[in-house]
Image 1 (cartoon, rainbow, N blue to C red):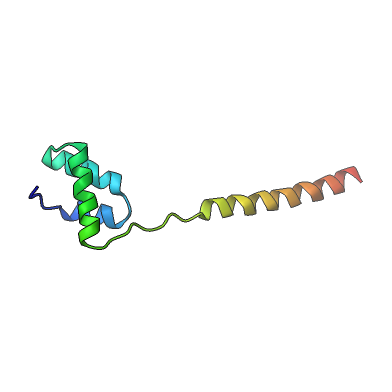
Image 2: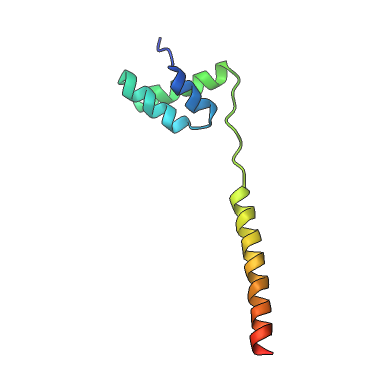
Length: 82
């Protein structure tokens, strides 16, 4: 396949949005899902690009929120019950 990836497709790949990149390739070139995925994977291999790691920020935020709400509940319980 001699398809040149457009800058917006490359930007999607670099931002870790491989699915969006595949969608854009399919829209512009009318190729199959498999071919578009292979193009994105090939680009990543040729440019030694690994997508950014998924961060567990949301799980930490949830844990902190749970802890704060638990403390608040405890203090409210102690204030109104005792």
